[in-house]
Length: 230
Length: 196
Image (cartoon, rainbow over the protein chains, first blue to last red):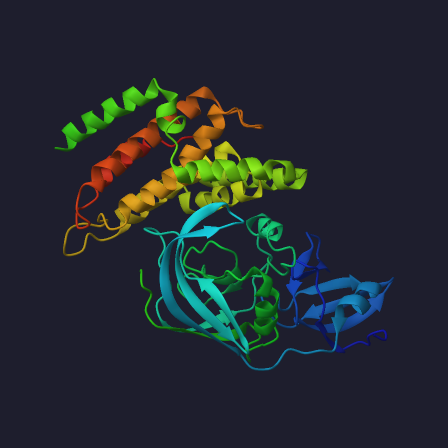
């Protein structure tokens, strides 16, 4: 990519394998993380660094910078699709004693099927009973990922699925205190948890490559059917 | 009734206190044994980063536990042992799960039946939890699993809690699904927090 010019709009088109791009805030403090397709406005370039204004997502309005070489490597002109992705989740069977190879334990799973675009993957909607419950059937908004989730919560899945990527990208579901997510893994605390580790990167891309008009949402989630166990 | 039951549980617990195998040694369930076998098989593949990740989650879990944020602590401990199996996380995960359940159920309205938590799946969940967590943790302690250095006081408390919960599972196994779980008994089994 040629050197960006002031006021040019760019997007995060590439990230680390955790699914995030680290940027340096203008104010003193730790590095900030932005997800793929975050919109950025070029403010200027000096001393080998490009200043950027974050235009959407949870860090909207913050000024950050990247080295010029990283601008060339990670930013580009590919914008997200300007509409919400459509995710459909249909409740399936309750499977007691489902074995997680990665966790070396049996879990009682309320299964469901998730469809997005041409992808169909298996999910669990709850694995921890008497405390958490599957999300009720209904329509929900899925939000732009808030921040990288602790890598220790999912890194061990790579031992059984080395191709797993973007596992630190968790999408909040607007429901209650927004503590339910669409994410990858084998253990659900009432989240929509994609069990199909090898397909997560595709599911993640299918969701993330969309933006709602508010710049804070990425998908419309429709949950259908009734869980066998609730 | 509750007093008699508590006395019986106390006797069971006392017997177990003098027989470490009672909680974790010689009568391992197939689930516990399978987990221990899987742990043993995985040992040579563990890296320093795996162990560091597990340790960090235990530290985070302890921080949440000490603030009585059992749900957060449970998530940390439960994700610690898949990074690198360790007795502490197995024991604490089981403990925090039930403390979280207790807290949640006590906060719920009793509903028309007057029972916040009935016996549906209770024994299944409790047994699965004990067999895959506390008993695994205690077996690792008994086998002097590498990296296990837990204080005798902590281990003794964990054994007592496990024995008490086991007795509770046995009691409710013979009762119908509609039976109401005695939350006071669950509270009694858990006792004071395992770490202060």
